Image (tube, rainbow, N blue to C red; front, side, top):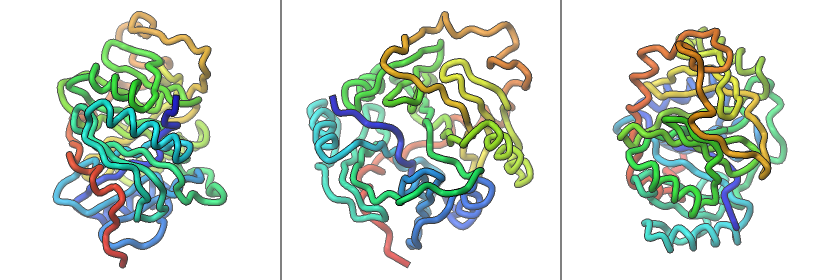
Length: 307
C-alpha cells in the first residue's frame, strides 16, 4: 500500500512577514531558500527543500500541512484513494513553486488543507549546523471529529494508529513513533508544530535561545510517554504554538500499539521525568487559536510574484 513517509513542510499565514522571518531565521535557526515576494521558504538541517513556508495574510493561520511520498506512482495511488473517499481534491500535477515537485492538495474531513508531494528538488546535502531543526517531526491537530480524521489518515494516507491516550491518538507512517497527533477538544485548529532537533543538547540549547529572544519555555524540559521524546514548548510570533523535540522513539512493524491504560502518571505528573511544572496558562491559551485556511490546498502550486 502506497503511503506518505512523513511531513515535508507546513505553510503558515502571518500578518507581519518580516517579524516572522526574523524569528524563524534567528532563534529557530532555519535558512531562507530563494527570494519570493510576499512569501518566505525556509529549510532546516535535512535535505528537504523547505520545511516552513511563510506567507503574508490578513490573520495568523495554518495554510497547509504537506506530506512527502516516495515517487509519482505513490502520489497517484494515494490520490486515487482520497478521490474515491469523496473528499474535495485536485488532480496530481507538476508544481510551479520553489522546489517544484509533483503532487496534489485536498480538504480533509474537518476542512483542513492537506497536500502530498514527491519529486521535489531537495538539497544535495544536509546543513552542517548543529542547532538547526532537522525537520518537522509531527503536527498535533485539535479535532472535533477524531474518527473521521483517523479514517482519512489510515485509509487515505496509509498511517497506522500507533498509540492512544485519553485525549490524543498518535499516527505513524515511518520509523518515527508518530508524525501526526489528533486530540479531541471540539475544535479543528492547530495544537502545535514540533521541530526535531539533532540531539538532546541541541534541544536544550534551542530552549535557551528562545529564552534569550524573549520566548520563554512554556512547558519543559520533559520526556513524553508515547514516543519517548524529550520536549520543550514555546510560543512564536503571533502566538504560534511550537515545540523543540529530540530522541523520538524509532519503531518498526513489530511495535505493539498501546491504549490509555498504558499511559498513566502519578498524581501531579505529566511526563516521565516529573521535574518540570505543568504547562503555563499562556501555553494552554494558544493551543486553540490557529485555524486552518479552508482553501489552502487549492493554491499549493501557486507562487507569489517573484521579487
